Length: 159
Image (cartoon, rainbow, N blue to C red):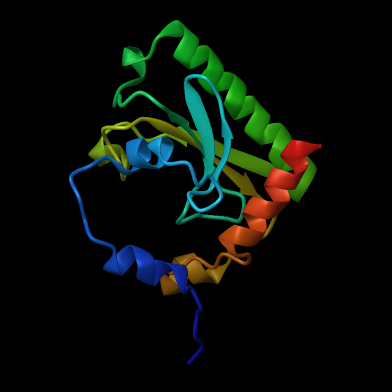
């Protein structure tokens, strides 16, 4: 039997659950590296997804706690889209993907894990990145640690 090593999952499993919004809490803390926040804008921030579909899976998150796109202001939406564009450029330069999945999951039924705090997912994709594991084993393999990915992306941002 093959074993998959994903030690970061235990932190999620054993972490105390709270009614407080995780995305609001992370934005208010100052340890960006610990919280995987790569860049802070005026109305949104960019962070690595702590439970990624692929290495480099980023999220653009509104600072304001809103669950519907139509509740965002023009200035929030403009910056949100600009930061999404910046994520694409950053990932192209740093990890050279062949494509992207980009989207918002609005509402629990649409797959939103944090349904009351809107955020956009930017998932880099490579030819052959989906193999038999998700289909047969119902398991996804992420081939790089979050810290390594964070450091690479942060270094590119500083250039």
